[in-house]
Image (cartoon, rainbow, N blue to C red):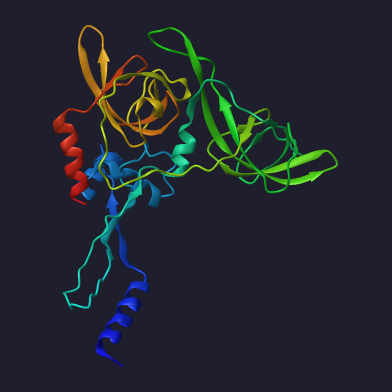
Length: 330
């Protein structure tokens, strides 16, 4: 067979081969000391404070990332190597080229996105949680409940179980702008028989009670990042906090009056400022999810409580560079 034809066949075979990814994650044990937070631990151990959700994810026994205690042992994921190797062979016998593909990781888990909730102009709903054959009115994981749905359903259909706040009033405009919708769990239809529809609680983020609202199920996909986050030139206001708590601290949830149609994206970082006699920076927030003109954000750090009426602004150049440099160190 002519040499040129052999080279041609070799090229075709190599192009058909899939790319190879090398990735290995090791877990390092760490003993929590007084004053530790997952944010601080992530900064010291992973060189990037925004990687704290990765630590929480591998330590599934930590129910609330805000509450960790001295003496507890946690595991910290250590990325050993991640690369995608692509080999290119040409008839001119040039040296093989290696390309490294940057690995993206989720900013937040799907559970965090669901549990954090969102602001909605109206209260959605397609049914309600009823009672149960056990007689209980408070439910959790794997409990079976009767449900009332306003349209025909079949076994396997899923619904979000939600709770709603009262009307949220804008701190400055003093107008009602919607309701905080908290996703408390997921219910899946397991039986439709003789007018009785039963569902199983397959996931639970908090107390589910008789009368809770059922909303249509939709897939939630966690946005991914390379570790570098935007801080767009957008100003707005903290308009509410989760669970109607007056003030919020690190890793708590807030809701802001700007959203996707205003240029906000999940992962965006902002500085928060308390404005009274003086304008005093008091923390940093990161957007978890957004609707048209509102968004949900998590408090990544705070020097003072963050409250409705605080404003948010673009990070200054030094803060933004620090975030990008930390991401580049990984």
